[in-house]
Length: 338
Ligand code: UD1
Image (cartoon, rainbow, N blue to C red; front, side):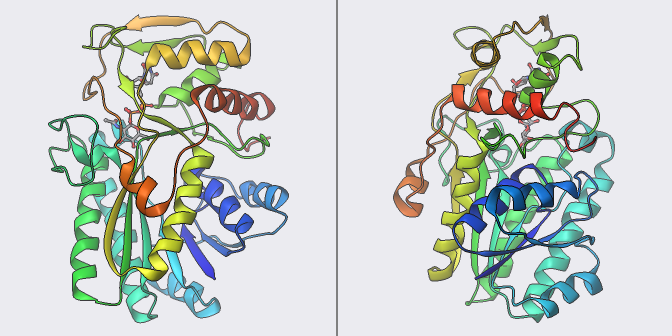
C-alpha cells in the first residue's frame, strides 16, 4: 500500500516514514523544504533500508500535487504540511491561515478527483483550548484557541468533518498529539528547528551542546508540585507508530475517528530538565523567568481510546526521550546542515 506524506520531510513525518517503511508500506513524500532539509531522505533510507520517493513541491500547488497522484497509486495520505510556530503565528496570522488552509483544501480537492479516500491528519492537543478538565478526552469540547496556529488545526479538523460527512467512502483519522520529543534511537533523524527553538526539548539540547548558554524556564508559580508547567511528553518513535496504526485502522473504517496520542502521564519542565541532565551527564544552566503568555499550567492525555481501538500504546519513558534527543543533537549539532 502506497502512502503519501505531505510535509513528510519534517520531524514527525520523517519518523513516520521510517515506521511505515519498516511495516512494509511504500512511502511518497511531498515537501517544499520550507522548514526541512532534503538530506533527511538519505537518512530515512539509511535506517529503513528503503528509499521513500521524494517530490519537492508545494502541496498547495494543485498541478504539482495532481502529478504526484498521477505518477503513484496513492491509497492513503498523512497530512503534515503546514506552518507550526506558535509565536510566529500570532505575528503573521494571515500567512498561517493562507498556508495551512490552502495546503489542506488543495489536498482534499486532489484526493477527491483522484478517488483517494483515506486521510490521517496531524492535529494537536492545542484544540482542547484551556477550559477542559485533565486528562483530555477526545469527546471534550474544542475551541478557545489563542493563536492562529492552533486555530488552523481546529479549522482543518472541522473542514475534515464536513468533507467526510459529504463522502460516505471517506476514512478520516484525526490524531491529536501531545508533546512529541525524542529522536530515532539511531541518532540519524531528529528535530532540527531553524533559528532559535520555541519548544522546550530542542532548546534544552541546544543548551547542552553549547549553542545556547542557558535555558529560560518560563514560570515557576504555576499550580503544580514544583511550580513549572506539566505536559504529556511522548517519544517521536511511539508517535510515528501511532500513525501506522491509524493508517491500518483507516483502511477498514469509514467516517471520522479522533485519537489522542500521548502517554497519559504528565512531567513538569523541571522533571524534563533533570531527566535530561541524567541522560547527558551535564548540568543544564537554567534561568527562571516570567510565565510565557498563553501557557496552561497542566495537561495530559487520556490514551484509553487509542489503546483500545488502535491497539497503540506509547512504550518509551521520559529518560529514553531525553537520551535519544541528546544522542541526535550531539551527533548532529547543526541538525541536517553540515
Ligand atoms: C506548543 C504548542 C502546541 C504545539 C506544541 C508542539 C502552545 C500553547 N502550544 O506546546 O500547540 O503542538 O508546542 O509544537 O504554544 N518552556 C520553557 N522554556 C523554553 C521553552 C518552553 O520553560 O525555552 C516551557 C513552556 O513554558 C511549557 C513547556 O516548556 O511549559 C513546553 O513548551 P513547548 O515545548 O513550547 O510546548 P507547548 O507550549 O506545550
